[in-house]
Length: 139
Figure 1 (tube, rainbow, N blue to C red):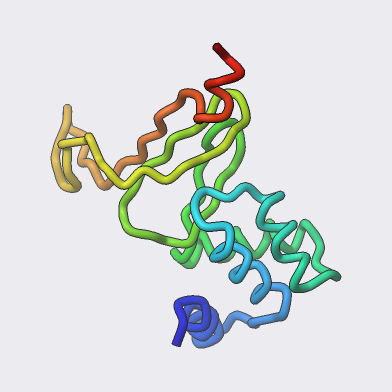
Figure 2: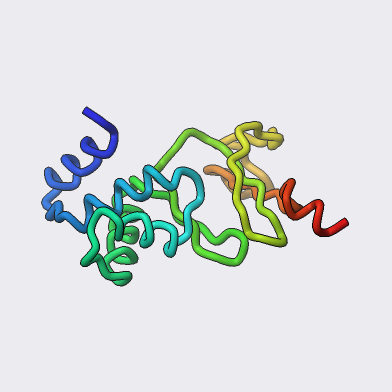
């Protein structure tokens, strides 16, 4: 069973309806890969389900985040979403907004550490700069 089918079956088991629209959003998230914005998810999902509305995409992403299947955060000035994945960070282009996954982690503080009375439960790192294409334009 694919991860997407497992996710949808788990939602169904928890009492949520698994509609064609929700299926399309989950498939779009999987196709989008890393750090997709709402418009990207909407565009990809609409190919599979042309009657899909933008509000349904927002609601489905919200549901998936509440249920713990999707991570949501602000990055590069926009809300970003991705299916829960192994720990990684992002490289964000300041010119075009492109986001690239970066698997190396330079942070040595680990989950459970205490810093100034604060218990660390995780971290996100966003490195900003210029992608290969935009770097040529900036020069």
